[in-house]
Image (cartoon, rainbow, N blue to C red; front, side, top):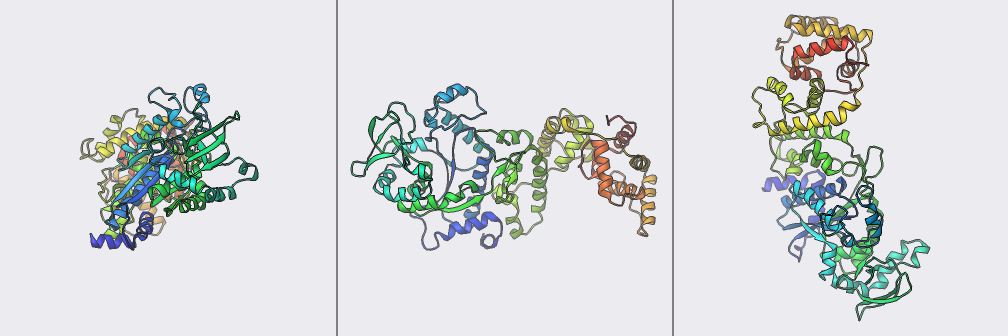
Length: 548
């Protein structure tokens, strides 16, 4: 452990860098509360989107890294701001009129439009927890409504009353002039309508623990700030929660970055020490727009898991958190294949290298072995040429390529085969565009057919390429079914037909045979699909069956 811990203390992997910052907070003494608190915040104003998952996944990675470099206990708290008033109706949920009638009420007081939970906030909280449980996160869930109503924030609310002027001074500096006139850090819940009121305070009484205000109809009310009668505006709420819970780490998107001094300043006013922060770049949809819960744009967690494994999504979340990334369906195949590449690399790496490998952070060091003997991208192409509608259709080809593989011995491959068929039929098939080969490409394709018909013809193609290139190396052994030999044949045929840039040759294969501009390592594809089947595929393309 000491050697591994030493390596972790020097690792440049971003979770370890963040973990070391958190550890530095307690270089003199451990936390009085007995543990280091990692927190994530969630606004349940709409169905949970994939960015919410990413926040929990990344925080969990930092928490795991911390647990390797320190013996201080840890806790991850997923906090839902479900007492916030519903400011607008999400576009992707039913019963829009019902929700419109309940605007400005706390989310846990808004009826559930799906009719499954006591409130809309409870519904969205349950969806978040189901998603997080799918990934096996170790976390505690916290509801703002429960915390406010149970009195867990009473002490900090009374302190906020006492230090009201100091909090308002911080907030008013950040507001436009017209907003300052009506702003208050306290949001009362109207005793009759149950709506969250955005009204100025007529007076605050720290001794009595109350606030006095006029509602929208001009009626005066006095309410205690305790017991769930009042909540804090979201920016003061951020800082107050940090102080109340003694939060040690919280990350959020760059849209919060400008507010960090406000959150931290209010936390300090309330006697707390601000946590370590990590600002990540935002997720974008296919149009480059920020993913939004209310719009429901971009990928949902369920959508990703329809086409790929949970681990592939965690891998995507690990990559470059400070770089904006498109979250659309076309990123899935690459994430799947790269995840398995990292699994295979992990087995041969040193301890220090393993700590820098994303899969260590995904699995907390308990890294499984990859059984993906066929890349996901290759399975997609196989589904394409085989016209597969069920994964069993792919297994006939897989077993010929890898005779020892079975769905039982290779469960990740079996799962990926099912995902590949589904992904192909939903996304690839509708957008495939085949083109007819040019005259030069027709000649090359015909030569490839000839070269694939016999080992002698294949070796002859390689020999011609070697002679033209002045290469006197001996010919490879004619292992006619192997990826490497078949790749050499395809390479040789391209060179023999004047393709100086072989990328152009391979692109021609993809566009004429697979209906795509990108594709697999073609020798591996032939080995998987079958030599005779590939010959038939090429001959059908030459006969004009694909291009319309």
